[in-house]
Length: 172
Length: 333
Image (cartoon, each protein chain N blue to C red):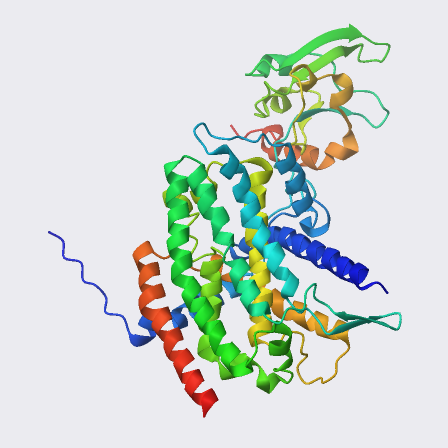
Protein backbone atom coordinates (compact mmCIF):
# COMPACT_ATOMS: atom_id res chain seq x y z
CA UNK A 1 0.00 0.00 0.00
CA UNK A 2 1.27 3.41 -0.89
CA UNK A 3 0.47 6.23 1.47
CA UNK A 4 0.41 9.55 -0.36
CA UNK A 5 0.83 12.49 1.96
CA UNK A 6 -1.38 15.37 0.95
CA UNK A 7 0.48 18.66 1.07
CA UNK A 8 -1.17 21.11 3.44
CA UNK A 9 -1.75 24.30 1.51
CA UNK A 10 -0.89 27.71 2.88
CA UNK A 11 -3.53 30.41 3.07
CA UNK A 12 -2.17 32.12 -0.03
CA UNK A 13 -2.40 28.87 -1.94
CA UNK A 14 -5.93 28.17 -0.73
CA UNK A 15 -7.05 31.67 -1.74
CA UNK A 16 -6.08 30.60 -5.26
CA UNK A 17 -5.76 34.14 -6.62
CA UNK A 18 -2.08 34.75 -5.71
CA UNK A 19 -1.22 31.49 -7.41
CA UNK A 20 -3.20 32.52 -10.49
CA UNK A 21 -1.28 35.79 -10.59
CA UNK A 22 1.96 33.82 -10.35
CA UNK A 23 0.90 31.56 -13.21
CA UNK A 24 -0.17 34.51 -15.33
CA UNK A 25 3.12 36.29 -14.74
CA UNK A 26 5.01 33.23 -15.96
CA UNK A 27 3.05 32.96 -19.21
CA UNK A 28 3.30 36.71 -19.74
CA UNK A 29 7.07 36.66 -19.42
CA UNK A 30 7.32 33.75 -21.84
CA UNK A 31 5.62 35.84 -24.53
CA UNK A 32 8.79 37.85 -24.98
CA UNK A 33 11.30 35.01 -25.04
CA UNK A 34 13.06 34.96 -28.44
CA UNK A 35 11.67 32.33 -30.79
CA UNK A 36 13.83 29.56 -32.22
CA UNK A 37 11.38 28.94 -35.08
CA UNK A 38 12.94 28.98 -38.53
CA UNK A 39 10.63 30.34 -41.23
CA UNK A 40 11.87 27.67 -43.59
CA UNK A 41 11.35 28.64 -47.22
CA UNK A 42 12.37 32.22 -46.49
CA UNK A 43 15.14 31.28 -44.06
CA UNK A 44 16.79 28.13 -45.39
CA UNK A 45 19.10 26.05 -43.24
CA UNK A 46 22.71 27.16 -43.54
CA UNK A 47 24.90 24.68 -45.42
CA UNK A 48 28.64 24.08 -45.21
CA UNK A 49 31.05 22.41 -47.67
CA UNK A 50 30.60 19.26 -45.59
CA UNK A 51 26.90 19.19 -46.51
CA UNK A 52 26.29 16.24 -48.82
CA UNK A 53 23.39 17.43 -50.94
CA UNK A 54 22.31 16.21 -54.36
CA UNK A 55 25.07 15.34 -56.84
CA UNK A 56 25.74 17.86 -59.62
CA UNK A 57 27.98 17.82 -62.70
CA UNK A 58 30.84 20.27 -63.06
CA UNK A 59 30.88 22.60 -66.05
CA UNK A 60 34.42 23.81 -66.65
CA UNK A 61 35.26 27.48 -67.05
CA UNK A 62 35.36 27.08 -70.87
CA UNK A 63 31.77 25.87 -70.84
CA UNK A 64 32.50 22.22 -71.55
CA UNK A 65 31.34 19.45 -69.22
CA UNK A 66 34.13 17.82 -67.21
CA UNK A 67 32.56 14.35 -67.44
CA UNK A 68 34.11 11.88 -69.88
CA UNK A 69 31.35 9.29 -69.37
CA UNK A 70 33.73 6.64 -68.05
CA UNK A 71 30.88 5.03 -66.11
CA UNK A 72 32.72 4.70 -62.79
CA UNK A 73 30.11 6.63 -60.86
CA UNK A 74 27.38 4.57 -62.50
CA UNK A 75 29.18 1.44 -61.28
CA UNK A 76 29.87 2.87 -57.82
CA UNK A 77 26.29 3.96 -57.24
CA UNK A 78 24.77 1.57 -54.65
CA UNK A 79 21.24 2.67 -55.50
CA UNK A 80 21.56 2.38 -59.30
CA UNK A 81 20.44 5.97 -59.59
CA UNK A 82 22.82 6.97 -62.38
CA UNK A 83 22.36 6.15 -66.07
CA UNK A 84 25.03 7.26 -68.57
CA UNK A 85 25.17 6.98 -72.37
CA UNK A 86 28.53 8.01 -73.75
CA UNK A 87 29.15 9.66 -77.11
CA UNK A 88 32.00 11.05 -79.14
CA UNK A 89 33.16 14.65 -79.19
CA UNK A 90 35.63 16.69 -81.20
CA UNK A 91 37.34 17.82 -78.03
CA UNK A 92 40.77 16.19 -77.26
CA UNK A 93 39.19 14.00 -74.56
CA UNK A 94 37.08 12.39 -77.33
CA UNK A 95 34.23 11.24 -75.09
CA UNK A 96 31.45 13.03 -73.32
CA UNK A 97 28.02 11.98 -72.05
CA UNK A 98 25.11 12.37 -74.45
CA UNK A 99 22.79 11.27 -71.67
CA UNK A 100 23.46 11.55 -67.95
CA UNK A 101 20.41 10.88 -65.77
CA UNK A 102 20.28 10.77 -61.98
CA UNK A 103 17.03 9.52 -60.46
CA UNK A 104 16.85 11.74 -57.39
CA UNK A 105 14.23 9.46 -55.83
CA UNK A 106 16.78 6.63 -55.92
CA UNK A 107 19.79 8.71 -54.94
CA UNK A 108 20.72 8.19 -51.28
CA UNK A 109 23.18 11.10 -51.20
CA UNK A 110 26.03 8.77 -50.19
CA UNK A 111 28.70 10.55 -52.19
CA UNK A 112 30.22 7.41 -53.71
CA UNK A 113 29.95 8.91 -57.22
CA UNK A 114 31.96 11.89 -56.06
CA UNK A 115 34.66 9.56 -54.65
CA UNK A 116 34.70 7.33 -57.69
CA UNK A 117 35.06 10.11 -60.25
CA UNK A 118 38.60 10.26 -61.69
CA UNK A 119 37.98 13.57 -63.48
CA UNK A 120 36.55 15.66 -60.60
CA UNK A 121 33.38 15.95 -62.67
CA UNK A 122 30.66 15.12 -60.15
CA UNK A 123 30.29 16.68 -56.71
CA UNK A 124 27.76 16.69 -53.91
CA UNK A 125 26.24 20.18 -54.03
CA UNK A 126 24.56 22.01 -51.16
CA UNK A 127 21.16 21.69 -52.91
CA UNK A 128 18.83 19.75 -50.64
CA UNK A 129 15.30 20.63 -51.74
CA UNK A 130 13.49 17.95 -53.70
CA UNK A 131 9.82 18.17 -54.48
CA UNK A 132 7.77 17.63 -57.60
CA UNK A 133 4.48 16.20 -58.78
CA UNK A 134 5.52 13.09 -60.73
CA UNK A 135 8.19 10.43 -60.45
CA UNK A 136 9.41 11.24 -63.94
CA UNK A 137 10.12 14.83 -62.92
CA UNK A 138 12.59 13.58 -60.33
CA UNK A 139 14.86 12.02 -62.97
CA UNK A 140 17.31 14.85 -63.53
CA UNK A 141 18.90 15.01 -66.99
CA UNK A 142 22.18 16.52 -68.11
CA UNK A 143 20.85 20.04 -68.37
CA UNK A 144 19.38 20.03 -64.85
CA UNK A 145 22.57 18.58 -63.35
CA UNK A 146 25.08 21.03 -64.86
CA UNK A 147 26.56 23.57 -62.45
CA UNK A 148 29.44 26.01 -63.12
CA UNK A 149 32.62 25.06 -61.30
CA UNK A 150 32.51 28.37 -59.39
CA UNK A 151 29.22 27.37 -57.75
CA UNK A 152 30.64 24.05 -56.59
CA UNK A 153 34.00 25.58 -55.62
CA UNK A 154 33.65 25.30 -51.77
CA UNK A 155 32.84 21.59 -52.02
CA UNK A 156 35.62 20.96 -54.57
CA UNK A 157 38.17 22.62 -52.28
CA UNK A 158 36.89 20.66 -49.29
CA UNK A 159 37.10 17.32 -51.13
CA UNK A 160 40.62 18.20 -52.34
CA UNK A 161 41.64 18.91 -48.78
CA UNK A 162 40.39 15.64 -47.30
CA UNK A 163 41.82 13.69 -50.25
CA UNK A 164 45.25 15.21 -49.68
CA UNK A 165 46.47 12.23 -47.65
CA UNK A 166 45.82 9.85 -50.53
CA UNK A 167 47.74 12.03 -52.97
CA UNK A 168 51.05 12.20 -50.99
CA UNK A 169 53.29 9.10 -51.40
CA UNK A 170 53.00 6.83 -48.40
CA UNK A 171 56.04 6.11 -46.24
CA UNK A 172 55.76 2.33 -46.58
CA UNK B 1 -30.36 64.44 -40.35
CA UNK B 2 -32.90 61.63 -40.23
CA UNK B 3 -32.57 59.99 -36.77
CA UNK B 4 -33.59 56.63 -38.20
CA UNK B 5 -30.74 56.79 -40.70
CA UNK B 6 -28.29 57.78 -37.95
CA UNK B 7 -29.37 54.81 -35.83
CA UNK B 8 -29.08 52.51 -38.83
CA UNK B 9 -25.55 53.66 -39.61
CA UNK B 10 -24.56 53.27 -35.96
CA UNK B 11 -26.05 49.77 -35.86
CA UNK B 12 -24.19 48.71 -38.99
CA UNK B 13 -20.89 50.18 -37.77
CA UNK B 14 -21.13 48.59 -34.31
CA UNK B 15 -22.31 45.25 -35.67
CA UNK B 16 -19.47 45.17 -38.20
CA UNK B 17 -17.05 46.15 -35.46
CA UNK B 18 -18.29 43.37 -33.19
CA UNK B 19 -18.13 40.69 -35.86
CA UNK B 20 -14.67 41.70 -37.04
CA UNK B 21 -13.48 41.85 -33.43
CA UNK B 22 -14.79 38.32 -32.96
CA UNK B 23 -12.93 37.26 -36.10
CA UNK B 24 -9.74 38.96 -34.97
CA UNK B 25 -10.09 37.33 -31.56
CA UNK B 26 -9.90 33.91 -33.20
CA UNK B 27 -6.59 35.01 -34.68
CA UNK B 28 -5.48 36.61 -31.41
CA UNK B 29 -6.26 33.40 -29.58
CA UNK B 30 -3.93 31.46 -31.81
CA UNK B 31 -1.27 34.17 -31.76
CA UNK B 32 -1.28 34.61 -27.99
CA UNK B 33 -1.29 30.87 -27.36
CA UNK B 34 1.66 30.58 -29.74
CA UNK B 35 3.58 33.38 -28.01
CA UNK B 36 3.05 31.81 -24.62
CA UNK B 37 4.30 28.45 -25.89
CA UNK B 38 7.49 29.70 -27.61
CA UNK B 39 5.83 29.49 -31.00
CA UNK B 40 5.21 32.07 -33.74
CA UNK B 41 1.57 31.46 -34.60
CA UNK B 42 -0.19 31.96 -37.93
CA UNK B 43 1.78 34.37 -40.10
CA UNK B 44 1.23 33.14 -43.65
CA UNK B 45 -2.08 34.73 -44.67
CA UNK B 46 -1.58 38.45 -45.05
CA UNK B 47 0.77 40.59 -42.96
CA UNK B 48 1.24 38.99 -39.50
CA UNK B 49 -1.48 36.51 -40.48
CA UNK B 50 -4.11 39.24 -40.23
CA UNK B 51 -6.21 37.73 -43.02
CA UNK B 52 -6.30 34.32 -41.31
CA UNK B 53 -9.88 34.80 -40.00
CA UNK B 54 -11.03 35.48 -43.58
CA UNK B 55 -9.25 32.38 -44.83
CA UNK B 56 -10.80 30.36 -42.01
CA UNK B 57 -14.23 31.76 -42.88
CA UNK B 58 -13.88 30.83 -46.54
CA UNK B 59 -12.75 27.36 -45.54
CA UNK B 60 -15.72 26.90 -43.22
CA UNK B 61 -18.08 27.98 -46.01
CA UNK B 62 -16.83 25.22 -48.28
CA UNK B 63 -16.99 22.46 -45.68
CA UNK B 64 -19.75 19.89 -45.81
CA UNK B 65 -22.57 20.34 -43.33
CA UNK B 66 -23.41 17.17 -41.46
CA UNK B 67 -26.60 16.60 -39.51
CA UNK B 68 -26.30 13.43 -37.42
CA UNK B 69 -28.91 10.70 -37.82
CA UNK B 70 -31.55 10.97 -35.12
CA UNK B 71 -30.79 14.62 -34.47
CA UNK B 72 -33.62 17.07 -34.01
CA UNK B 73 -32.99 18.76 -37.33
CA UNK B 74 -34.85 21.96 -36.63
CA UNK B 75 -33.27 22.64 -33.24
CA UNK B 76 -29.91 21.43 -34.51
CA UNK B 77 -29.99 24.15 -37.16
CA UNK B 78 -31.41 26.76 -34.80
CA UNK B 79 -28.85 26.30 -32.02
CA UNK B 80 -25.82 27.99 -33.63
CA UNK B 81 -27.91 31.06 -34.41
CA UNK B 82 -29.19 31.05 -30.83
CA UNK B 83 -25.60 30.97 -29.62
CA UNK B 84 -24.43 33.84 -31.81
CA UNK B 85 -27.48 36.08 -31.60
CA UNK B 86 -27.47 37.24 -27.92
CA UNK B 87 -24.00 38.78 -28.13
CA UNK B 88 -25.02 40.69 -31.24
CA UNK B 89 -28.20 41.91 -29.55
CA UNK B 90 -26.55 42.95 -26.30
CA UNK B 91 -23.80 45.01 -27.92
CA UNK B 92 -26.52 47.49 -28.86
CA UNK B 93 -26.71 49.03 -25.38
CA UNK B 94 -22.97 49.34 -24.74
CA UNK B 95 -22.07 53.06 -24.64
CA UNK B 96 -18.79 53.09 -26.52
CA UNK B 97 -18.19 56.83 -26.45
CA UNK B 98 -19.78 60.19 -25.81
CA UNK B 99 -21.64 62.22 -28.41
CA UNK B 100 -20.21 61.72 -31.86
CA UNK B 101 -19.49 65.04 -33.56
CA UNK B 102 -18.60 64.72 -37.23
CA UNK B 103 -18.49 67.57 -39.79
CA UNK B 104 -19.89 69.93 -37.14
CA UNK B 105 -22.96 67.77 -36.62
CA UNK B 106 -23.91 66.02 -33.38
CA UNK B 107 -24.98 62.44 -34.05
CA UNK B 108 -25.70 61.53 -30.44
CA UNK B 109 -23.87 58.99 -28.29
CA UNK B 110 -21.98 56.12 -29.89
CA UNK B 111 -24.33 53.30 -29.02
CA UNK B 112 -27.19 51.83 -31.00
CA UNK B 113 -29.80 52.07 -28.25
CA UNK B 114 -29.68 54.31 -25.21
CA UNK B 115 -31.92 52.27 -22.90
CA UNK B 116 -32.84 53.36 -19.38
CA UNK B 117 -32.66 49.72 -18.32
CA UNK B 118 -29.52 48.86 -20.28
CA UNK B 119 -28.05 46.59 -17.59
CA UNK B 120 -31.28 44.65 -17.24
CA UNK B 121 -31.61 44.22 -20.99
CA UNK B 122 -28.01 43.13 -21.35
CA UNK B 123 -28.18 40.54 -18.57
CA UNK B 124 -31.55 39.23 -19.73
CA UNK B 125 -30.58 38.80 -23.36
CA UNK B 126 -27.04 37.72 -22.49
CA UNK B 127 -28.41 34.80 -20.47
CA UNK B 128 -30.11 33.52 -23.64
CA UNK B 129 -26.67 32.60 -24.96
CA UNK B 130 -26.70 29.38 -23.01
CA UNK B 131 -29.81 28.24 -24.90
CA UNK B 132 -27.71 27.84 -28.02
CA UNK B 133 -25.27 25.64 -26.16
CA UNK B 134 -27.95 23.55 -24.46
CA UNK B 135 -30.08 23.15 -27.59
CA UNK B 136 -27.01 22.34 -29.67
CA UNK B 137 -25.98 19.68 -27.18
CA UNK B 138 -29.46 18.27 -26.84
CA UNK B 139 -30.45 18.28 -30.51
CA UNK B 140 -27.27 16.52 -31.63
CA UNK B 141 -28.40 13.10 -30.39
CA UNK B 142 -24.92 12.42 -29.06
CA UNK B 143 -23.96 11.63 -25.47
CA UNK B 144 -20.95 13.90 -25.50
CA UNK B 145 -22.97 16.83 -26.80
CA UNK B 146 -25.72 16.20 -24.29
CA UNK B 147 -23.26 16.09 -21.37
CA UNK B 148 -21.65 19.30 -22.60
CA UNK B 149 -25.03 21.01 -22.83
CA UNK B 150 -26.08 19.82 -19.37
CA UNK B 151 -22.85 21.01 -17.82
CA UNK B 152 -23.27 24.37 -19.52
CA UNK B 153 -26.74 24.79 -18.08
CA UNK B 154 -25.63 23.85 -14.54
CA UNK B 155 -22.66 26.17 -14.78
CA UNK B 156 -24.70 29.08 -16.14
CA UNK B 157 -27.23 28.88 -13.31
CA UNK B 158 -24.42 28.81 -10.73
CA UNK B 159 -22.49 31.75 -12.07
CA UNK B 160 -25.32 33.89 -13.39
CA UNK B 161 -26.30 34.60 -9.76
CA UNK B 162 -22.85 35.81 -8.82
CA UNK B 163 -22.65 37.86 -11.99
CA UNK B 164 -25.94 39.60 -11.34
CA UNK B 165 -25.30 40.12 -7.61
CA UNK B 166 -21.93 41.74 -8.30
CA UNK B 167 -23.54 43.98 -10.91
CA UNK B 168 -26.26 44.84 -8.38
CA UNK B 169 -23.60 46.24 -6.03
CA UNK B 170 -22.52 48.63 -8.78
CA UNK B 171 -26.13 49.52 -9.53
CA UNK B 172 -26.66 50.26 -5.83
CA UNK B 173 -23.70 52.64 -5.92
CA UNK B 174 -24.76 54.35 -9.15
CA UNK B 175 -28.48 54.30 -8.42
CA UNK B 176 -29.41 53.65 -12.03
CA UNK B 177 -29.82 50.82 -14.55
CA UNK B 178 -28.72 53.04 -17.43
CA UNK B 179 -25.28 51.94 -18.63
CA UNK B 180 -24.55 55.44 -19.93
CA UNK B 181 -25.37 56.97 -16.54
CA UNK B 182 -23.28 54.34 -14.75
CA UNK B 183 -20.33 55.16 -17.01
CA UNK B 184 -20.92 58.88 -16.56
CA UNK B 185 -20.94 58.54 -12.75
CA UNK B 186 -17.29 57.46 -12.86
CA UNK B 187 -15.85 60.34 -14.86
CA UNK B 188 -12.61 60.63 -12.88
CA UNK B 189 -10.16 57.78 -12.29
CA UNK B 190 -10.84 57.97 -8.54
CA UNK B 191 -14.53 57.33 -9.10
CA UNK B 192 -14.08 54.10 -11.02
CA UNK B 193 -16.04 51.34 -9.32
CA UNK B 194 -13.03 49.06 -9.56
CA UNK B 195 -11.62 51.02 -6.57
CA UNK B 196 -14.83 51.26 -4.53
CA UNK B 197 -16.08 47.78 -5.43
CA UNK B 198 -12.93 45.65 -5.77
CA UNK B 199 -14.65 42.46 -4.58
CA UNK B 200 -17.56 42.93 -6.96
CA UNK B 201 -15.08 43.59 -9.76
CA UNK B 202 -13.17 40.40 -9.01
CA UNK B 203 -16.32 38.29 -8.75
CA UNK B 204 -17.73 39.85 -11.90
CA UNK B 205 -14.61 39.11 -13.94
CA UNK B 206 -14.51 35.50 -12.72
CA UNK B 207 -18.22 35.13 -13.46
CA UNK B 208 -17.79 36.51 -16.99
CA UNK B 209 -15.27 33.74 -17.64
CA UNK B 210 -17.89 31.20 -16.59
CA UNK B 211 -20.65 33.02 -18.50
CA UNK B 212 -18.71 32.95 -21.76
CA UNK B 213 -17.67 29.31 -21.32
CA UNK B 214 -14.02 30.23 -21.22
CA UNK B 215 -11.14 28.55 -19.48
CA UNK B 216 -10.87 27.60 -16.66
CA UNK B 217 -14.66 27.09 -16.81
CA UNK B 218 -15.14 25.68 -20.31
CA UNK B 219 -17.01 22.61 -19.16
CA UNK B 220 -19.39 22.75 -22.08
CA UNK B 221 -16.52 21.94 -24.44
CA UNK B 222 -14.03 20.13 -22.23
CA UNK B 223 -12.07 18.38 -25.00
CA UNK B 224 -10.32 15.70 -22.92
CA UNK B 225 -13.58 14.34 -21.50
CA UNK B 226 -16.32 15.25 -23.98
CA UNK B 227 -14.54 15.26 -27.38
CA UNK B 228 -15.88 18.72 -28.26
CA UNK B 229 -18.81 18.95 -25.87
CA UNK B 230 -21.88 20.65 -27.25
CA UNK B 231 -20.32 21.26 -30.69
CA UNK B 232 -19.03 17.71 -31.22
CA UNK B 233 -21.49 17.01 -34.02
CA UNK B 234 -21.27 20.40 -35.70
CA UNK B 235 -19.36 21.18 -38.85
CA UNK B 236 -19.00 23.88 -41.47
CA UNK B 237 -20.39 27.37 -40.88
CA UNK B 238 -22.64 26.25 -38.02
CA UNK B 239 -19.56 25.21 -36.09
CA UNK B 240 -18.00 28.58 -36.89
CA UNK B 241 -21.14 30.35 -35.67
CA UNK B 242 -20.68 28.85 -32.19
CA UNK B 243 -17.21 30.33 -32.06
CA UNK B 244 -18.32 33.62 -33.52
CA UNK B 245 -20.89 33.71 -30.73
CA UNK B 246 -18.33 32.82 -28.08
CA UNK B 247 -15.87 35.49 -29.18
CA UNK B 248 -18.62 38.07 -29.62
CA UNK B 249 -19.89 37.26 -26.11
CA UNK B 250 -16.36 37.71 -24.79
CA UNK B 251 -16.17 41.08 -26.52
CA UNK B 252 -19.48 42.21 -25.08
CA UNK B 253 -18.50 41.01 -21.60
CA UNK B 254 -15.19 42.89 -21.85
CA UNK B 255 -17.08 46.03 -22.91
CA UNK B 256 -19.53 45.55 -20.03
CA UNK B 257 -16.68 45.18 -17.52
CA UNK B 258 -15.17 48.42 -18.80
CA UNK B 259 -18.51 50.22 -18.60
CA UNK B 260 -19.38 49.00 -15.13
CA UNK B 261 -16.03 49.15 -13.38
CA UNK B 262 -13.52 51.14 -15.42
CA UNK B 263 -15.46 54.27 -16.28
CA UNK B 264 -16.45 53.36 -19.85
CA UNK B 265 -15.02 55.94 -22.20
CA UNK B 266 -13.60 58.18 -19.46
CA UNK B 267 -9.94 59.01 -20.06
CA UNK B 268 -7.72 59.08 -16.95
CA UNK B 269 -6.58 62.58 -15.92
CA UNK B 270 -8.29 64.17 -18.91
CA UNK B 271 -11.66 65.82 -18.37
CA UNK B 272 -13.85 66.67 -21.36
CA UNK B 273 -11.85 64.55 -23.75
CA UNK B 274 -12.75 64.46 -27.45
CA UNK B 275 -15.22 61.66 -28.19
CA UNK B 276 -12.68 59.87 -30.39
CA UNK B 277 -10.13 59.90 -27.56
CA UNK B 278 -12.75 58.53 -25.22
CA UNK B 279 -13.60 55.84 -27.76
CA UNK B 280 -9.93 54.91 -28.07
CA UNK B 281 -9.67 54.73 -24.28
CA UNK B 282 -12.70 52.46 -24.20
CA UNK B 283 -11.21 50.18 -26.83
CA UNK B 284 -7.88 50.07 -25.00
CA UNK B 285 -9.53 49.08 -21.73
CA UNK B 286 -11.73 46.48 -23.45
CA UNK B 287 -8.68 45.09 -25.28
CA UNK B 288 -7.02 44.44 -21.95
CA UNK B 289 -9.94 42.34 -20.79
CA UNK B 290 -10.06 40.51 -24.11
CA UNK B 291 -6.38 39.76 -23.67
CA UNK B 292 -7.11 38.62 -20.13
CA UNK B 293 -9.53 36.03 -21.50
CA UNK B 294 -6.77 34.59 -23.69
CA UNK B 295 -4.09 35.03 -21.08
CA UNK B 296 -6.01 33.05 -18.47
CA UNK B 297 -6.96 30.38 -20.97
CA UNK B 298 -3.36 29.58 -21.84
CA UNK B 299 -2.15 29.75 -18.23
CA UNK B 300 -4.63 27.84 -16.10
CA UNK B 301 -5.80 24.24 -16.12
CA UNK B 302 -9.51 23.45 -16.19
CA UNK B 303 -11.37 23.01 -12.89
CA UNK B 304 -12.93 19.73 -11.94
CA UNK B 305 -16.73 19.86 -12.12
CA UNK B 306 -17.21 19.52 -8.35
CA UNK B 307 -14.64 22.27 -7.82
CA UNK B 308 -16.59 24.47 -10.20
CA UNK B 309 -19.79 23.92 -8.24
CA UNK B 310 -17.96 24.38 -4.93
CA UNK B 311 -16.46 27.66 -6.08
CA UNK B 312 -19.73 28.91 -7.55
CA UNK B 313 -22.13 28.07 -4.71
CA UNK B 314 -19.97 28.04 -1.59
CA UNK B 315 -17.46 30.78 -2.29
CA UNK B 316 -18.57 33.24 -4.93
CA UNK B 317 -22.28 33.40 -4.15
CA UNK B 318 -21.83 34.11 -0.37
CA UNK B 319 -19.09 36.61 -1.13
CA UNK B 320 -21.22 38.47 -3.66
CA UNK B 321 -24.21 38.43 -1.29
CA UNK B 322 -22.10 39.78 1.58
CA UNK B 323 -20.67 42.40 -0.74
CA UNK B 324 -24.14 43.46 -1.83
CA UNK B 325 -25.38 43.70 1.76
CA UNK B 326 -22.33 45.71 2.84
CA UNK B 327 -22.74 48.01 -0.17
CA UNK B 328 -26.44 48.46 0.57
CA UNK B 329 -25.74 49.38 4.18
CA UNK B 330 -22.97 51.80 3.26
CA UNK B 331 -25.00 53.45 0.50
CA UNK B 332 -28.05 53.92 2.71
CA UNK B 333 -26.09 55.52 5.57
